[in-house]
Amino acid sequence: MSEQQPVTEHQDGAGDHDETTHAAPRPTPVAWILLLPIRFYRKVIAPFLPPMCRFNPSCSAYAAESLTKHGAARGSYLAVRRLLRCGPWTDPGRDPVPETFSLRRQPPGISTEE
Image: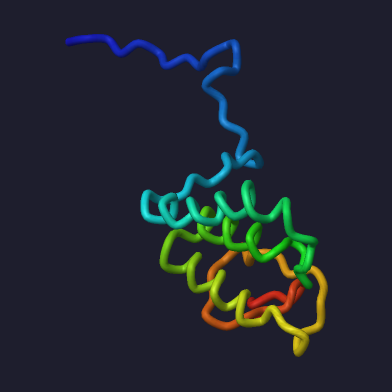
């Protein structure tokens, strides 16, 4: 019979994981491809245009974050929905990317849980 060795944890803390720290989400391969024209616009075209976005974050930043956080299909849906809201008929203000995906828009600060 073999004896089992006691399991010891690393003393230097290198193997410890902090649950409150989250790594930044990485875009899926399709989302990464969809991010290319957004990055091009933000680096090459946007610096020559005056700031015109009614929302904070800007529509291009919102699209980049939604694609990164929610993937290609859901992120594209959120980005297009945001672009359709960008007009004089909508009140300007803060409109962050939702933490969880929903087909319906939830105003900032309103929980979907009941």
